[in-house]
Image (cartoon, rainbow, N blue to C red; front, side, top):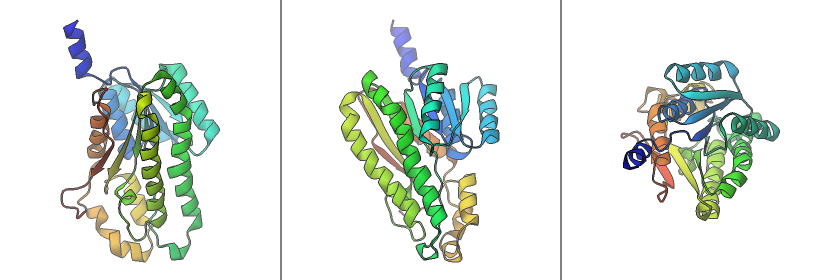
Length: 259
């Protein structure tokens, strides 16, 4: 009996069903690989099928248990169908990592309204769609863990990131209130706030900046930046805490970054 308990303590995520959005590349892929290495049954979710399947194959080569489901988190019906498929494959969702997000850095005077709308749709509505698809069941079962990936821009004001930062400020406030609502229902809620991370998303963001933002942030590509695995380790740390302990929020920054 003691031996079994010890093994469970060593692998607290073993056989947990974890849904990770934005899982095809970057932070989402790193989180998914780490979850699989910890013994979780991982559901990879993203819009782009090819990189999604490549991440799935990498996890399977390492012996991980994984399924890949193409889904646009901005579409509520697609999200509900994705969760239904995940549960029919692995069982009820224990962990939801809301990692899918888009970001553009541009001064508001240029009125990039299509970019604004995309950030609101993915970073706010997409997160709400995913939470709405799992939270009733988590509360009914008295267990579950939701991890929302925010950003340092959700805590500080950065020129050129008014709308992106605004979506993350929404995420911060919503997450704190959700935690208050469900903490006594057996459901944990964590928010992780990474600073600049070397990912394909950062590269795309830097290439699409207006000239004023390039003057401010053009050196981001040179670092010092976090790696995707650094951010992922923070998520795994929060998920592995004992039942009676929760990590509410984590700000993860490069040592040399002045925040």
